[in-house]
Image (cartoon, rainbow, N blue to C red; front, side):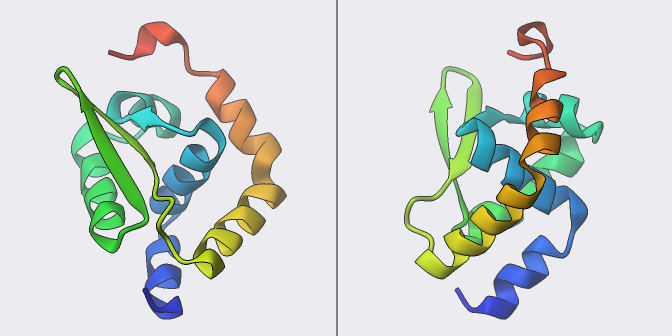
Length: 106
């Protein structure tokens, strides 16, 4: 991954939000991401596909649900950029996650 590719991906507010949420939560499914962001499932899925294709996000299937997490294989410099962004917005990210109840999901 080249820096310009990472910055193009993070230039979209929805994708940046997804990355920061995954950085905080560790793992989330699409329905949780939809509830937190207020975006539709198809829109979130399109953004997740771009993040997955770039190697920033991995998925795992559990029954009919797919859970997403940040890839531990991303370059260290990319993880550092994400960590810096998360550090500066962690309170907002944590507040967003608290607003999602377990009943919202799967």
